[in-house]
Length: 173
Image (tube, rainbow, N blue to C red; front, top):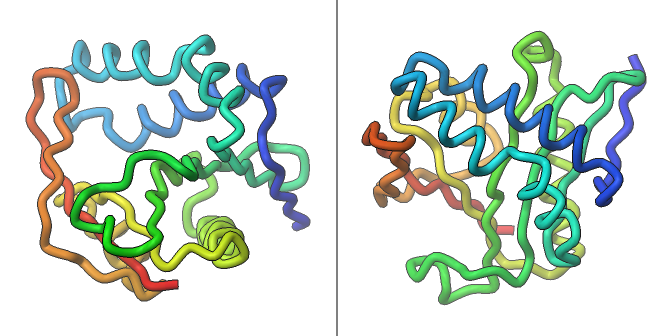
């Protein structure tokens, strides 16, 4: 089936808001209280917040469509604050890469991640890093296939009042 990857624009704010909220919900529902999850969704995935991010020329949202359906997306903020531990190189964080559950296992995440890595190489970045939940072993294995290394550096990532721990994974470009 044909895929297309596009850079989202401010006109895509509703799409990104809905896709982001649904994929985040599918990923984290049951790992924290419903109240905490709803708070995160309202704070980070509301249309006004997404529109603000899409209006930032350094914020890149790439959406992968399978035929006409938005299956998943990635977000990077070029020129943003770099985690101190990665600041010795020209680094960028892959802030988000999420797919709707019905599209898992179809090779689409591989396609989008490859697209993002190629994009960052073309922008002359030296490394990319991302945060992975300590209990998401499937995601960790996926990133390791792409030569991301687990730095073993913890990144506290609470969802509301629910404490959670991520680890920074890093890839040299």
